Amino acid sequence: MSAWAIDVKGLTKKYDDKIVVDHIDLQIESGRIYGFLGPNGSGKTTTIRMLCGLLTPDAGQGTCLGLDLIHQADEIKRQVGYMTQKFGWYEDLSIRENLDFVARLFELPNRSAAVDAALQSLGLTQRSHQLAGALSGGWKQRLALAACLIHQPRLLLLDEPTAGVDPKARREFWDQIHQLASDGITVLVSTHYMDEAQRCHELIYIAYGKILTRGSESAIIAASDLKVCAIQGQVSAEAVQQLKQSPGILSVAAFGSAVHMAAQDETWLDQAAAKVLAPAGLQATRVDANLEDVFINLIAKAQQ
Image (cartoon, rainbow, N blue to C red; front, side, top):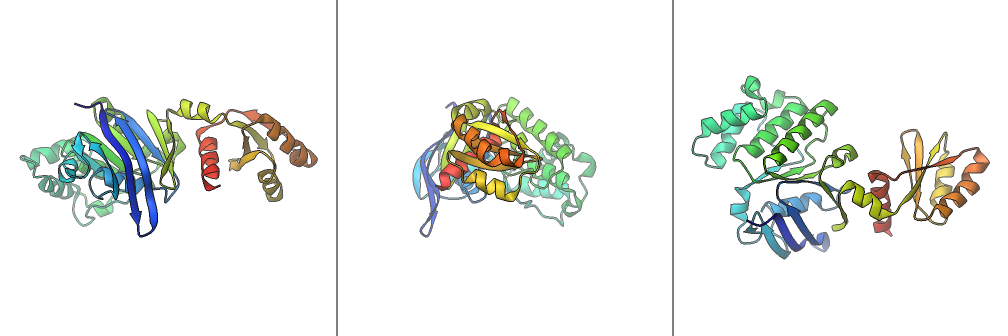
């Protein structure tokens, strides 16, 4: 069996004259968690839907779980669990009824046992007769994940699964994802949360339909060679605009009570600080770049 759960080249999708996914090459190793990051409209969801056989690429080729992406899409669907961004199960059915419906779709030979196992694995047994529409966001998330897993897929494709879920439920969800990966399941999960990105084995950052960078968190930060300083205190909107327009400054963004300013050369940071910050009585302190600094900078470059 190939070491690659996903191995595609030149993957492309367009609608009319708009290219949504632009000749993406992607290799994903089996049994690992990959974070799929990027701004809204970057092509993440379209890529995920092509990988699981729901959309046919306009160009490109490759395999998913060793199956041809174009000619064996129906077989791929049976071995992949896809969790959509929006809760998509029947709110007027109970948890058990929803899972039984999914088991029917996959034609599982022993539906009752499969449903019981899915309920047990996600801690849903005590709520099995509760209507899906009455569940909180965290419990709906558990139901959606149980539906993804009921047919024992080898690959999970999760599209912003924790959007709108409270921090406790998010942490429990990620504990479950790591347990699944330790059992040999490959996971590709899109997210906007940097703390979630840090829990992935590898990250893939996409914008405007193209992969801008990929690798581990530390490797991506190191490769950026980004120099960052943090400005504490009241930074006026006018000062922020002046910093953004200063020579060599790549990005200026608010981080809580601080403002981060990034450049490729510390000289540019010093010059901007001396010209804009010093007259206002503000100081800039050197800090290590983080993922958000790097991704903000990548988007700024991609827009040029």
